[in-house]
Amino acid sequence: MTFTATVTNTATVTPTPTPTPPSVGVVFKLSISETPIAGVPIQVNTETKITDQNGEVSTSLITTSLYTISSGLEAISFAELLETGTSFGARSPVTIEAKRLLSSVDEPCRLVMDGAPYTYFSVVNSSDRSLSVPLHYAPLNTLYSVTGQAVPPELFGPGGSGFTVPEFHFSSGGGLSGRWSFLGQDIIVPFDPVVCADRGVPGSCVLIEQETLRIPFNYTRRVIIKLVNRSLSAAKTGRWRGTGGKFTIPFLSRGAAALRSMEMTFSESSQQNFVCEVTPRSCMTKQVPKRALVKSFSKIFEGKVPRGLEHVAQTAKREVAAFERQLQRVPNSYTSCPSG
Figure 1 (cartoon, one colour):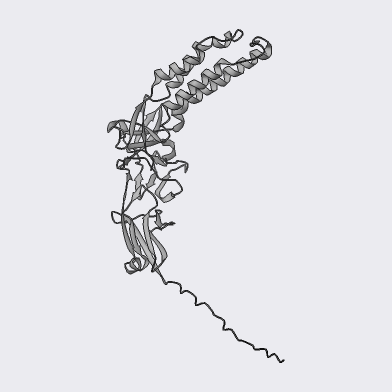
Figure 2: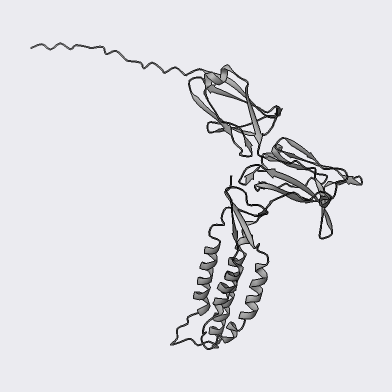
């Protein structure tokens, strides 16, 4: 029997590469009141582009893809654009007319605080929330001073507000010299500023540092630690012998209850907080219950204490008085606003 081998040639199938969609170069030009603004972040979908000195960003877009163009900084607002690469390319350069939600209207003026002169810069926030202009966007928030060390704030509350800078930063030739570059505005420091009191210092909201509202809690915690350490010291020296060899520190449990009460009092203060003359829309003003806080603190010392710890409890009047002095650093009310 004869076997014949048959060779079969199998054709190799080469996949056809998917053609890359064509792309088109597009220029976006941002301006406010027809003035180009440099240093503004613009979002092209998820990619951030920064405008150049002409207020422009250049990018390459795939013609068949859909793109959303939006502001990367809430303090500068414009309507989002949603189009294909082809559509944007057909009308490049694409003009974006934006508006600033933060502005400085009044000329800087002079304030005297604790005998020292300061330069006051006013800001108007036309939104109902706090807005930030981070310092790393240098063209949008930079103070130019003689010393080169003046730094503006990054966060601005709703409504009118302002900030002060020691005047020596701008002193030059018997007068002042400097400017604040802010969201496309150049706010010039006058050579001889008017006194702010002559026109009234503008402002309805002043930012409260977050730690300010934590003063009662943090101070109480330090006092509890101090009382516990004194109790342990009394036990080590034999002044406090405990009961049946067991030591229960009363200030610890009472202090924990006081801390829980204080934590609940300011539980909704984790947002941006301000002292405001007028409560802006979407914000909420709350009273600081100082009497209740003092009462809560005083309970740490109320009730019986084990024999040998009387000397610790006898510091109650002094500690409560110190706590009340700490409360003077806390405003009587505060306004919480959503951050933006």
